[in-house]
Amino acid sequence: MQRREINAPDAPAPAGSYSQAVEISGATRTLYVSGQIPADTDGHVPDDLPSQCRLAWKNVEAQLRAAGMNFDHVVKITTILPDHASLGESRKARAEAMGARKPASTLIIGGLASPAWKIEIEVIACA
Image 1 (cartoon, helix red, strand yellow):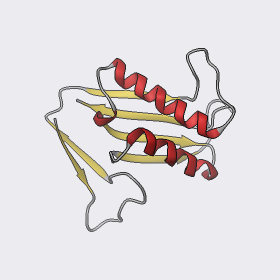
Image 2: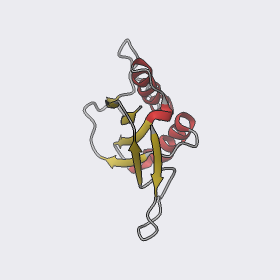
Image 3: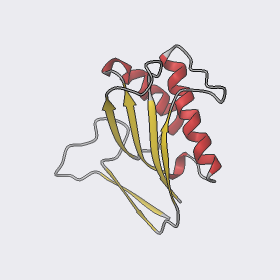
C-alpha cells in the first residue's frame, strides 16, 4: 500500500495535526470503524473528559487490532464532540494515540447518542 498525504498549495493549510487529503494506492483491504464510544467492555463510562478521550482511542485501537491493523493504517478520522470546550483534551488524546501520523480528519461539534459521552471517534483504515 502506498500512502500520500496531500495539502494543496492553493487551498487553506490544515488547522491542526492532519492532512487535507490522503491518497491510497495498492490497498487490498479497507476497514470502516463505527463510532467508538468512551465505554469499557462492561459498559462503564468514566466521568471525566480525559479518561473518556483515552478510552475512545483505546476502543478504536481494539477494532483496528481485531482486523490485523494499527494506527499506521488509519487514513481518515471523524471526531464528534458535544462542545468546542472539549477540543483541547480531544487533541491531546489524539496526539497520544496517533503520534506524528496525519490522516485526513473531520471534527463535528454536535449531540451524541448518550448524554454521558463526551466524545465519539470513527476511522477508516486501509491495508
